[in-house]
Image (spheres, rainbow, N blue to C red):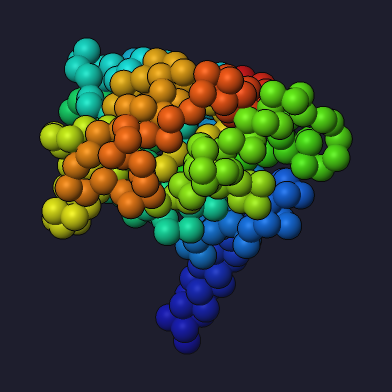
Length: 353
């Protein structure tokens, strides 16, 4: 009888304690502020079922994005190479790791990632899902050069993080899975959709004649012919999120997508970046070879180089490019700059406070 009573009390205490634990884990759903043009033109963003957005998770992810404890020597954070003022890109051609080492790729800007429907990230599509993408830089010897075991331990010993993880995920035990989930949640909130051109499409402002002509050059297949890879007024992402060889080199040294797939037909293919926020994201291309927009435009106008895997969309490669006039180049640049979103880079929700 006594044993039965003790068992009943123990069971009651266990259930009661478990209930209290569960009461502590009551995350609040985070609702994305989706721009009207996105709602009209795009399907709903991709949010993994096993990592729903919560206010607590996003807040934790933001704190971790700016947290230097994630690096081996506590000197760098994700934001060190993805600066909010530069639309979460790096003004250096190649970012510096904690040991002074440089990579071979320019840091990609980070925005509108929730609409990357194929869920392939990095210039070469080497990571599937934002969660996996956040995993790699921590342990990369060229970047943050840490171990996940040490990073988790540093956060576990921190006076704030165990409680923040408890609030976000229902457990105070910190590991790499939860760290990357939190960072991915924050990154999915980085939405850019209020440039001058967005306001123009909403009927809130007008374009200059040069900007309007530049847009026409952009979408005209006989002129700029840019919209196949970089979207249009009907694609507010301003990218197809696909992989292309855009005629940078005849002899391809960086295989890009080809290194991931092992298919020679993919050699030299890289992800089309969004052309939003170009005012803030120089230098350009996967290797940051072009310092200015003028150089980018000149490349497509008369600098295309043939190769075995060059994209068929580079239709005028034999002529060197689309052969724009000086006026068309200037107007095209004027249009491209209308896609820069100053509200985005100044959003306090995306800054370290």
